[in-house]
Image (cartoon, rainbow, N blue to C red; front, side, top):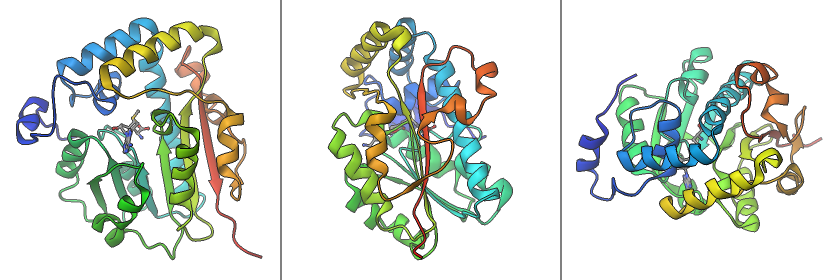
Amino acid sequence: MDSIDAAELALSLPEVDPERPSPARIYDFWLGGSQNFEADREAGRRAAQAMPNLPVSAQANRVFLRHVIEDLVTERGITQFLDLGSGVPTAGNVHEAAQAVDPGATVVYIDIDPVAIAHARSLLADNPSAHAALADVRDPGVVLEHPVVRDSIDWTKPVAVLLFAVLHFIPDDDQAERIVRAFTEPCAPGSYLALSHGAPDHAALEAQQNAARDYAARTGVPFTPRTAEQITPWLSGLDIQPPGVEDIRVWVPSLNVSHTGMAPCLGVLARKPVAG
Ligand code: SAM
């Protein structure tokens, strides 16, 4: 994968403050990526001191993401993806996984982080079916009206709306539910919503709370783990696909072996029903 020098990139993005860690770049650091600054690495190291399983949990989330994308393309015929809170593109991106099966699959990446989107744009410069736009998922109307989304997504055909590891950065339950509903509402019947979401780590609750407190203090972004009981009501009107709102180790049993000790993370795949 192309690599952009993060410091060089920051110089071209005056809105980026390299001293302020960002969730996208901390996550990139945990995944072993290069699109992060010292402040991101420091915040990532501190969080991982409190909760040593955070990097392995981030990697497990990517395994789940690829599992779902491959299933959506191969088994369910989905060819359009709206990836909300897409992060810094890393190996095994949505477009790589989808286009490996269907080279014409359309992918739109949305993220609030300018470095993530600049990197995505550079990576996708020669890819006519994958695009990236800087936007905030808390403003669904702005995202849906963004020219990149309007020009790329055909809402008369099934779409997969992806919210992987992003809604736990929305502390207000009602707002998180509104986001889910706003993006699934315009979808054609037969569309899918896929998401993952950090869950309370009952084996290390205090450590998780300490890590979340420090993370929020450094990034300005709170982390709100939720249970299946909190997430399930957001999905009313959609058909939840087996195995349900479940830990991603239930979705991908090999994670129990390959990612031992990861923090709890819930996975969801839900389908917009076809009338009749
Ligand atoms: N979805 C990717 C994945 O699962 O591999 C990246 C997950 S990363 C943990 C969370 C991403 O959500 C970050 O890139 C962050 O910038 C983005 N994000 C957080 N709040 C957001 C918001 N309000 N609007 C858009 N993106 C947001």
